[in-house]
Image (cartoon, rainbow, N blue to C red; front, side, top):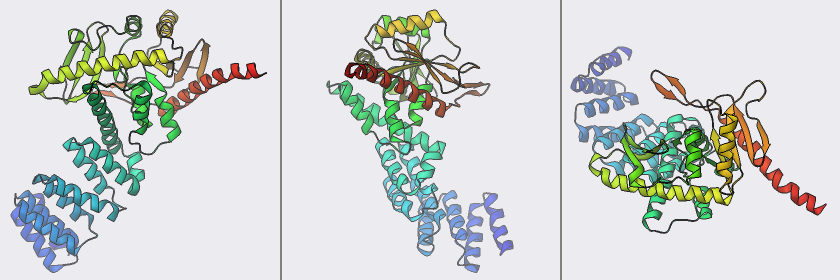
Length: 408
């Protein structure tokens, strides 16, 4: 058997697709129970450009070998090349529970909808995957990225629709929407904990932390970079000019647009794909969204329902810290958590109460890892979780102590 299989592989690896099909058919004739011969023969037909013939060949093989997962995945590839997306999705959806030991079927389904940009379908596919392959859904970085991106896109689209309807949701309605968003894995308590915090910068790290714990709130500064001095100025000026065409700059990246504010130097992800032909509409959409998020941030600052987070990779001076806290307090909010790198006196994951709502948290690493090839995030998620738990506990304790004294 080895000789005839090697003979077939030699043509296959040489990309001689017609000869490869003939040789794999010879293998199948000699060894009719050898399923890979059917798989590779069908692949050879597909690579030769005979899509209909390849689909028929692989589909016939799936009847003979219903437990061969590669036949399913290769049929899906044929359907994709033929742009028969709905048929492909139906095939994969039906196959996911049939192959509990093969998560690649569920991953292919996720990738199909992700590549098509159908974000609700990605979330539906993730729920199907949750029932069959929960471990892969929680541990596979690529899967987590697709699902998280879809969750954020669904929330962003919902917000854009509400803005367009001129009925912006209240603070509590926004909380309810974020809480109702599709969630996989992780502790529900941890997710709700993360929803009680709001990022003020300095970069996207805390946004990644919230995403890790399956929380996807929308915030003006969640996916933004801003220095402590610019943030203090922006707070003092109530983010003047944010959400106006005059002060907003749109930049085209490799795959998505980013934006900057020309006064505060605030750079932000937009999560809007590049579409050069439609840039005027995209710009108007972005400006409207920024104005909405600005109003939300000011409302959140005045409500005192959030703990605001600002991380300082390079540290912060006492004067800058004092000014930042003052700028936050002017709205009525007193809950500010500033996170620095840990040192010999401050353990990773610890939080120190400085009084009047100001807290200092410490993590063993902050900011991206900078390499010649680019920036890579290696976030200390568990330390961040410990910091958020400790900060939340401090405020719960502070709220209960006066009540206890009054009762006494």
